[in-house]
Image (cartoon, rainbow, N blue to C red):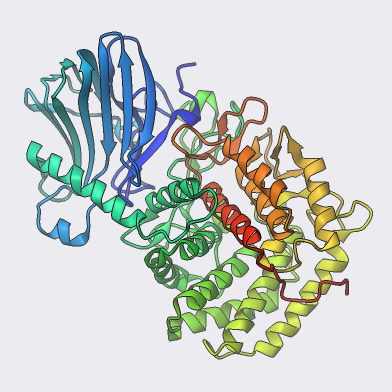
Length: 611
């Protein structure tokens, strides 16, 4: 059991790249210069080959961790027999104005060690392994306190406040910390430009700037309802998953963390899913973070140019629609969970739900901010609506990206309806030109099909597929998009059936009795639980919604981070982490509970009675 549990990892980043730090103070995952680059530290996927950067006591210790209030600065406190030391980890986050006033490296990971009491012996292990562990480190000592490597213009540099023992493969150090002392360890990265070495004084300055940046950003949160601390932590996590230069939002910063230990459900999530990003836009708008929503829409216009009006499920952070999937056969995988993958074959799939989520998000942006729709945006929405009109009757691969062939998924049809409804609303509200009557007429046809073919009266639920009898937690989104009210009898019976059929120790699986084309099992999907809480809130079953929400919160780690899934038998995390969709759905559920507690009426966009 060399590998720490997945829940042992916390995230630091600068909205361009990130690092996963374990409870033992080891940076075990870091890709440079951006989220989807090859890893420099990848021990989370191969303990021996992956590489890491550890700073921890050299004696036995206990650990407690936190994010400094209102920030993404991680503080790990080690309590040893001889004293207590704190490790502070962050990647510099500064305003554009602050960046323009100082020469700084392209990327940096800053690690500060402070002694809080006594004397604590510490150890340092700097073991870079470029290119997913296939590249030679090629380290060289510049001084006793500096080590660097240059691979084709990719320059990494470690400046240490303590002396290092350096070989071509790694650098190591032993030191004591005493009260009143702050030791600085700064790893910088540059590409095709001169390396910039950060001085001690600038390190302290950028630490204060980073604290101020995150606190200023967090102060923009307008939400003041139930579970505010969890909502704000989720927003801060989502901000780390956004790629600031383009506005794209990655689903997760990791690849191939398994949905089942030892299994093959190991996927690369370091890309921008239209679905997840659209959900993020709506969540950020609801919390008052308008700039992030605007940035995503700008990215979307760029990303879809090559494929519009057809939308791919995902794109790279720069809008490239091709993400060829390959297996990194030299890596053993987290706890021998193979294969490790780079790229994602689902980029070739057809997923009709993304059209609804996209148009819904654009409508929310316009309705909340009141800004004008550009000509390109209007053309995109019209194109998407017309594309849905022509294609919604076709089967697709669905929200869960099954690899067993296309089907008529109920959730996909509901979201096709959602696309046409919101496109028509944009016309009726005077934001765009378009044939609203034709779109609404087609939406009514989709609605009738869903009610007749997607609801199985025998099992009392909306089912996974048309004319099906298997269960799918994705149908819990039906009231969330206004297709039916949460207190509609069919929705109430669906919720009951989904809970009965898919719940394991209070957590929901995504589906049951369905061959998705991939072998092995998986855990319970965090997002499904939060969707359940939100659906209950939409039905004004507030106490039940709170119970589900609070039970789901037990799947968070000690610093409030959620992975993709939870093992219902142990409570341990599974899948890529942190998972943006888990945090988005947490925000969605908290907002729904807040609305229900205020007595808001959750409406729909059509008749509640059966057609």
